[in-house]
Length: 86
Image 1 (cartoon, rainbow, N blue to C red):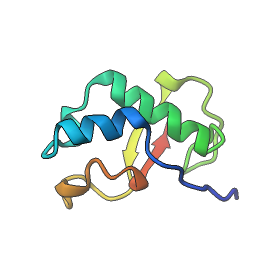
Image 2 (image 1 turned 90 degrees about the vertical axis):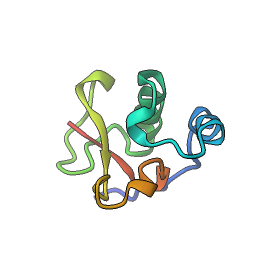
Image 3 (image 1 turned 90 degrees about the horizontal axis):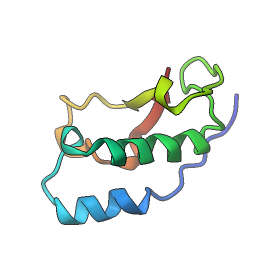
Image 4 (image 1 turned 45 degrees about the horizontal axis):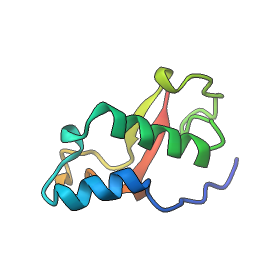
């Protein structure tokens, strides 16, 4: 098992959140979602957070929320709860 040290969120996400203070994850553009994916893939050593399988292709995975979005919609843009899944 590897320790994952969360870094600060990507600056493009921070800027988007400042411009859209009531925004939700489902309103993000695909390019911002891709930036989030890339950022977290680097944090997680390109390993799936669930099965530790190597993720080779950024388009073969998706952003996953540790806490269900419908249970806490105010945290859908909380970068600390993102992980990657195949």
